[in-house]
Length: 411
Image (tube, rainbow, N blue to C red):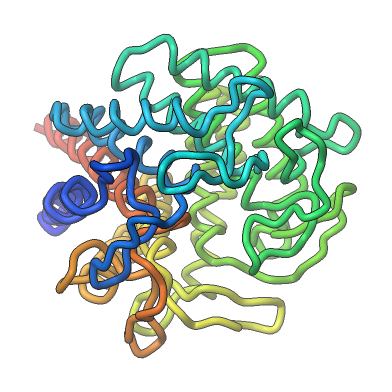
């Protein structure tokens, strides 16, 4: 383990604590109406009356619970407690089950649809919070949402999960997560975040049905979603798994690589884990070959003809960092850890908003930030950058222990 890798760990710790977590504790909590402000611009102008999203609040809860689980600082648990209470009170549908999409700034429901993606994030957050707070209630609530997804959204005929439902769990005509997405019944993005949610839920409950469906998801990715010819993730499908798009999301590729391996690790099937490890390394190689610009950044999108979007969004930079550390753990090939360090340095220089705090949503190929996209909003929370720091710290610490063991064995 090189000194530069140890410095990477220290840099990750500093940004996590002094940059990301401090910003969200100091700038984003709505002390008047509860929860967190629904919109803050890049230069910290607060829209106190913006609607508040389930995804953002779940991501905040996950981040602060996970930060507490790593750092054992009570102030992070207090924020997690506060966020959990807000979600429990305002986003959970006690009558029909599941999670509302959006509430107004006072906490009143304004969009009661049941997007499977958002429901999965609340499972993910509640399961992580259950570890932090040692609470049975959070586990039971997470299992309740799991049961609703399995009852209504799981396709027992063709496998996989449909996208969006009414409050009463009737399949909607408009299934899109956002305006930029295709209106298709099944997507890589939703399945990826169901996967991460079920991984943590299985970790904390060891529930047999959760484990069964987690295994099914891993196999679904290997057999339907990962393209065996290119090792890109296919993105949009109809209900019969017919591919409806040739777009490539380099960030989702490399994020998915490490999330799949995390899932297989917790499942404990060594044969399946080896299959996933092999795929994870191949995805990392393809990302290096096709998805990284000359300055070291992960570009946004491509298709079968090549790159179609050279912008650098905040989240792929650091999800890729974790993906490459994961590939290094699998192979101990230096190119992966070197690429991870380059990505982190790129993010620190170009993606961190040094003047106003937190991170830019994206910069262009000349590293000029987009000033129109918010720093805090329905999709922008401390989860991607916070999780990458947490994962990076944990993985480097593990590698350092292994390195010390190896040195001891050679003495």
